[in-house]
Image 1 (cartoon, rainbow, N blue to C red):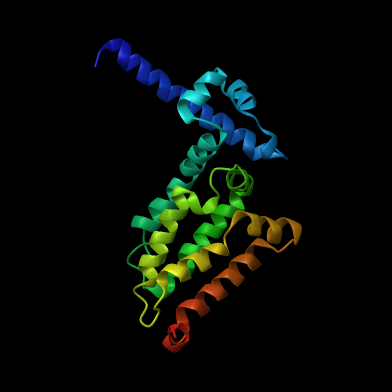
Image 2: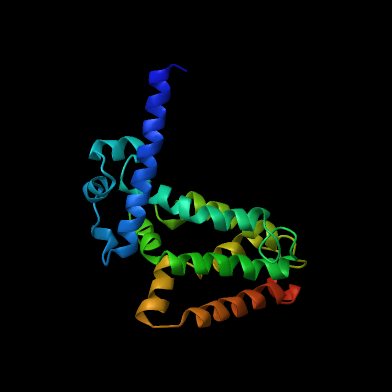
Length: 202
């Protein structure tokens, strides 16, 4: 690689980081994140709007990149961390722990999660992070004796952590954070502890 090419790549990486940091700060303090534009973010990052479009494609692409950056520590803990979240935990303990981690992430990143779900990027079910969470939950559920439809069950459990539902319960209904966590934990515990007969298909 020549020096100009190396400098170009370093500049691109530096600009990308500046954009992600600026977008993160703007979404954190904005009352209406859906109103934030690419121009707003470019100005805050000190780069041209064209730089944003080259790096992220569009607003939805920028939202996805920022979401992935924030999600990375949670994903690492789920994939290689200690119990109850990590892979060494028994499935009946790990399923509620995984859902709690997702719920807490959504509570802490409500505005970004909502903006991403409402961005017209194919809906939450098309997102790469949703596919990863679903695959992980399904693989854990498949280890529970008698549970015969892990695929559907993973979808049903993840539905309880949708950003729009979290927003409605936490903000509009005023349900306290710890109560939400307790309710989801109780629901997940019932699902993974239901007698096998309840899951048999006709």
